[in-house]
Amino acid sequence: MAAGTVPLASVTSRAVTADTRFRRMADDYRRVADEQLICSAQIHVDVPDRDSAVRAMCLVSPWLPPLLALTASSPFWLGADTGYASWRTMLWQRWPTAGPAGCYGSAADYDAAMAELIDSGVISDTGMLYHDVRPSAHQCTLELRICDACPRTETVVLVAGLFRALVRDALGRLERGAEPGCDGHHEWLRAAAWRAARSGIEGRLVDPATRRGAPAPVVLRGMLRRLRPALEASGDFTAVRTLLDEALAAGSAARRLRRAAREENLLAVTDLLAAETRGERLAPRAAHRRRRPARAPGAGRAARAHVHSASAPGTPG
Image (cartoon, rainbow, N blue to C red):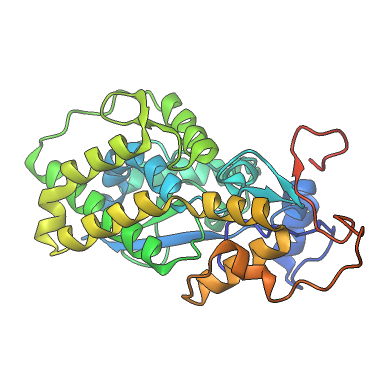
């Protein structure tokens, strides 16, 4: 099933693929590697060359947290509600290279900086560059990496359309010289990603146009307006606008999963995730009711898989 985290996962050390590289990572990063029970959605967009990919990163980076908010699907971790829409993001950001990519004037500058990072010994190879966006090492593409895995394919299509428009818009601005140089201040990007992970599309986001908080629908519709020329050039505007309207009306996957847990339990959450991954649209109660075993009167909640508050004593993590 497609989700940023598995609601009922349990952490076990040393359950590692029999590969020298992965075993070395498990030894080096220990608990961080043990808890890598997460899944993201990664999207590639064609670019003319590697220089273009590197230079476009700086322009698209401010707009990536709203894409994360659209895909947030991981409110549960080890059987508990974390209070976040994307707990996967919090787990992912513990890796030493996770987060904003930074800005570079050329592919040579970027490659030199990454080589220096590898030489430090903190990471072992370019496969461990876990930035929110990066030039692909194997294809002539720019790769989006900030998003949760999405149970609904419509969400993936929406994000792919927006990200392709972001890249197209960035390349056009670079070609026209229409974008001022980077101011070097990237601190707010990590804060914006935290805000998106915490709230999803149900709360506030950091608006890249103002660097101030604003309701998620305001930020996302502003993004749509900004990208309209690029979306129309690709023939995507009508489809993306419709998908965005539907996403805002339906709410995030995190919201749907919490509703299923509130009305039923975490088994209903996994049923709902599996159903949406298959393309079905189950009502939350219907997702689990068909499998609920009969209970003797007075058995009450003892047989239920409970959702605990992340702040409750004894809660994992």
